[in-house]
Image (cartoon, rainbow, N blue to C red; front, side, top):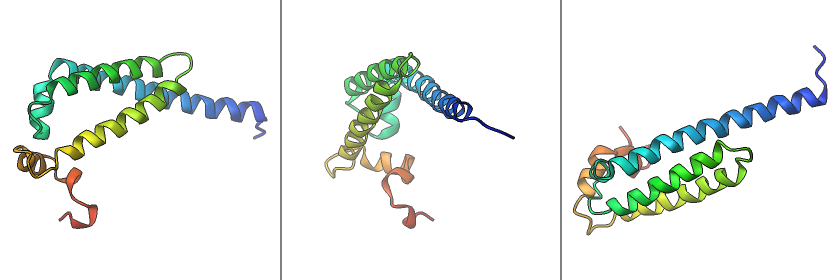
Length: 120
């Protein structure tokens, strides 16, 4: 098999395009869930009362999903990375001792709150 440089480049380009497209569709689905059912999302995380924040995150997910499906997905993918960092910071706030839903959150999502070496 004799591969030219251009066929290798187009092959890797197709892989990155498929990844961007998959992230785009995932973002659209997650964003629609967050917009349509914010109470379900917040209740499952033990973070009731943050429905407006979840709706905003849903809108952001939809926008980055549409961008990832566009011609140049790179800015949208970086926007998604920044959004994921914000989501992690929000989830970390749910670990505070004054969060009444903390026990619910830890019970429903134990792998998110415990280090991997402490899991049974």
